[in-house]
Image (cartoon, rainbow, N blue to C red):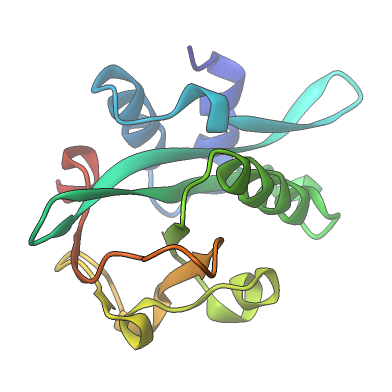
Length: 160
């Protein structure tokens, strides 16, 4: 389950997009999220950050791939390493699951340092809802695995 404290992190981290806490609820309720890929960052006994992953698909073919989103850190705790720690923990956990790749939509200057590159350079086309093509990125976690190619299709909660 997702606690009210986690929802508050997303509410405050995404004050410019008040839909994000509802998105988190919908990902959980719809069974898209992967509970073992939901991590929190704490400071003392306070939850100051949260990240989760959910399943989406690549068309044609319908292969499932994991998407990292949302990642939120309370404004007063940003730029202290919490977000980076959450991304690294997620990458390690997704790799340990044996998944070939992890996708996200975000700032390349931030996510590039974790090994994320433009997804379309590897044959993964952004979904129509992507705000800007250059922000749709992938981290290949297993160089020997075949990463599906085609159009990425966000799970239903991301499409409305």
